[in-house]
View (cartoon, one colour):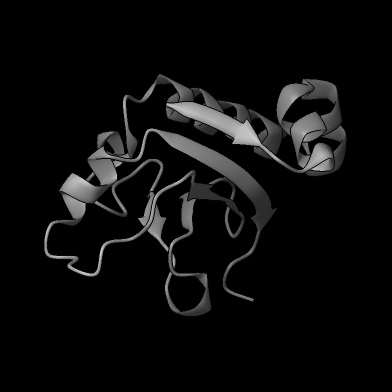
Length: 115
């Protein structure tokens, strides 16, 4: 999958291990590197189907954040991303097929989505 990062600060964190360790700590920096590698190695988001399956626990957010997805980092933090040029269909009867069409993502942030 093609993984892009629009935010310059997040890009430095993702691309530079020393920056990631300084900002996030050693454990979370390692977890971030693992998640980025898994996302890049995937053919599409469907490689993480079914939703909330360990270890990534990839799933779509709800409510105001519908259309954004998350993968686990170090509890309670998540890596938030959105599909590039993907418009959610009105008919959501086949989510697995929809996930298979998502082959490009844009990383948005690292945050605690439960706050």
